[in-house]
Length: 69
Image (cartoon, rainbow, N blue to C red):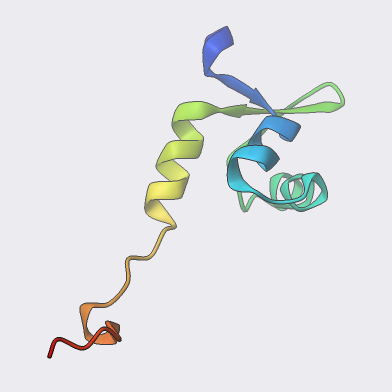
């Protein structure tokens, strides 16, 4: 992991638009990929992007509520 590839917990929280406490719990429980270094959590930008891709659902075309008249 290079210096540019590493994110701190506050950066991840801002990026995901979530509270830092949520990211902390997710990191502790393994919901989100992270590595603990001393007392800090470090996140790989690439692993985070892969996690987002794998855990993002796409809207179902059948649920499109726009009517076409």
